[in-house]
Length: 246
Ligand code: CDP
Image (tube, rainbow, N blue to C red; front, top):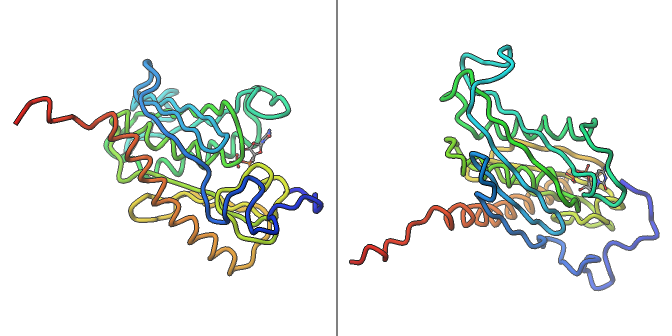
């Protein structure tokens, strides 16, 4: 979290720098099956984030010591393109991308019926083309529909959102300025229907009451984002029965 106290994140009108209300999401668009060679794929735009996801598998796990005789091994790889951020990002894995890859793998694994595919691996490549705060959650939300598009059985979709504190207020879906200069950042992802938490991280300081408020903002936002996920899936898989006549 930054310390630039001279940046006023909430205006006198109660609105945020980008004009949003405190519990307003940035615009979100998702699409599936955007890559021909992947088993499943998706593309998401969430605010200024632009992220592509490609899913391969289940396929035989390699090297063999990764094979689990009871279940599939889920390996998400989060990567930021060198041109995705203001200051060129050095290509290749770093501590941040390794941490994000790990928490995203675990979150996805809790939704996938891995027990149906012993000794296999499921690879989920998350390529951040343009980053604008909230990339781990946007990447995870997009990954979940890419896994579904690959035809891999899932218990539920994974859907997430970030909330936090900026300019002394609890706000939903932090912008880049709020992420940099705000007081706290709390990304959460859940199984869409049961609301079981599968990812929760926090950076900064909030009181217990503020965390409660952030949780309820996130839970109601995930219902809206889940609808967008379903629409993205249904728009490719819905058959227009009218073509067969009455
Ligand atoms: O993206 P997310 O909020 O999940 O993770 P973060 O580590 O809190 O990063 C917040 C934002 O900082 C990213 O979304 C990027 O916009 C930016 N960032 C950057 O400019 N350069 C980096 N090497 C890493 C992050």
